[in-house]
Length: 180
Figure 1 (tube, one colour):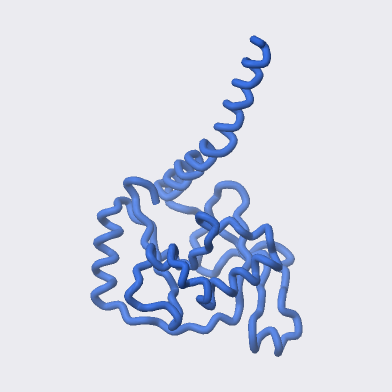
Figure 2: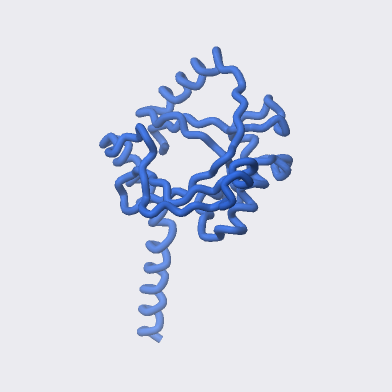
């Protein structure tokens, strides 16, 4: 979430990952390559190569964002509270949503549904495109101002590392060319 604000998230580890790993260690561990969620993401990315924006450092880290907090301390406090009562959850993934976010409104919408396993076999079609993007039921349509502000700061930092640097290099090379 930035240097001052936090994002509380969970790593949905399967039975293949030791429960003693913390999220930041699991995401960096080479032993997770056989992790079912990572294998599934790899197969999906082969089918949808443009959907690769969740990779950090060339690796995909499955995660479930629980909340954004105003401070890092608040995120750490929430984490401690949750760890006191948290029990592992089992889930079966029968569908995957392909999401999009247009512009900077912050809310993701579903553009396609990919059925897996039994649902794919029963319905015949494994990928169903939405006629128009649809919101998640219960998802707020407008994000809070502080969340938007923090997301815009992150976007600005990312863009500074990309186009901003390239354009400065180009202008230097033009100046150098003019003086030679």
